[in-house]
Length: 280
Image 1 (cartoon, rainbow, N blue to C red):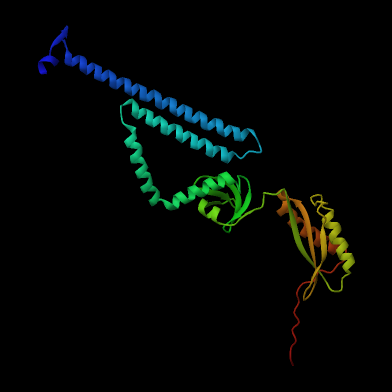
Image 2 (tube, rainbow, N blue to C red; image 1 turned 60 degrees about the vertical axis):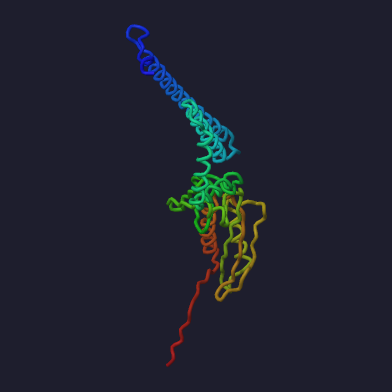
């Protein structure tokens, strides 16, 4: 064998040299093919992810989060097939690798049950969409605006603009109060007047003040009635509807406007008093 490999075939070039060159050329070809496949796969995966996300951005009624999720799944799927093709260029049998990866995935899944439950909950949140980016919600006692919904966690921005991270398993497993889902909300107030006040006058002042605000909706009709006879006041319960976007400011403004209007009309607004009798 050594004599055959050492046989000179052209200007000092032996058979062994030729075989070595062929082997190196084969390796070089495989490496170049692998690089080409990697570049092409990465480009296609990124392009597909971007295109799917832009579909969600193009239409206002579609949720971008859902399309971003689909784009990510497609991207990683393409990259996985790219990796398999790269291994095939080097003659690696991928069947055994896939089986090994499956076994390893099972072991990792058992070890990361908590993380996988968050991922499963994230998929449910993205598909069923009980909340979406921009909604003002209350989840598991935490209140804020939804900034991001990922496969592992949901990010909220509190009223004080503090970041709140809630695991998706807690989001999906808790009661979700979504204040943004409907375009209108009902505001509610309790206004107390003195027992000696003219109730008809007080009712008229409260109604005119609330209905006089441009943010108050005419329909559904405003509700206003005496609701309670307190220790020191007669309490009116008032309910009116407004746009959800202005709810908090509207509710605060009406309280002040009604107080000022009652004062201007001379309607007594009582406050708790205590009489102390001194024994002689």
